Amino acid sequence: MTGRFISFEGIDGAGKSTHIQAVADWFRARGADVQLSREPGGTPLAETLRDIVLSQPMGSLTEVLLMFAGRRDHVETIIKPALAAGRTLLCDRFTDASFAYQGGGRGLPLAVLEPLADWVQEGTEPELTLWFDLPAGQAAARRVGREVGSREADRIEQLDLEFFERVRAGYAARAAKAPGRIVRIDASGTVEQVGAQVLAVLSARYPAC
Ligand code: TYD
Image (cartoon, rainbow, N blue to C red; front, side, top):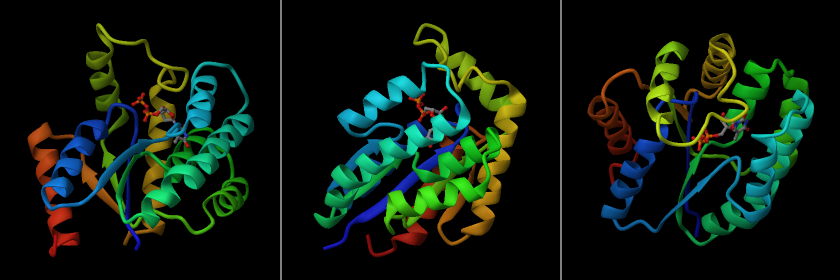
């Protein structure tokens, strides 16, 4: 039995977390056994690495190695078993985030990222990636609204608009290379407008569901 692996991507503030719940509900309503996870994190070890990577100062190469170390544990202990059990695994970020943030944002070359991805994933790849795309300025404005009264911005969220525009360009480059897998969602509209695009993609991809 093989399940479905679907990932959700976008710059911080794009709104992807809101829509993951709607996608989970959509699949559950069609009888799927849905499991939610996230990166960085998803396992006790990877969540510990997440706390470190989002709070401690470090170089870009250290940052990407910790992202991929956590991902390896996540792939082995959560993702592969979930897919083997036939579940629908919805993951809030996966390897595309490393290409966008550490590649586009930090400027690490593909010659570093691609071998890491190959070693760590060993062929485990999302079949569908929903990329919530919007301009960095708009995403920053949404983050300000969200952060009032909740937690403070983490080390990466504190970076400037230019960084997030590079991350966005990193996602665009990644999407251009995998047009069948990565679907761009225009995340600049209201929750209802964005949600309608997401449901349209799901109905087209999974007509038998
Ligand atoms: P995020 O999903 O935005 O967490 P939350 O919404 O709970 O704040 O992820 C945390 C940060 O980690 C985010 O700024 C993107 C970054 N990140 C990378 O830089 N590289 C990666 O490979 C991953 C998975 C995330």
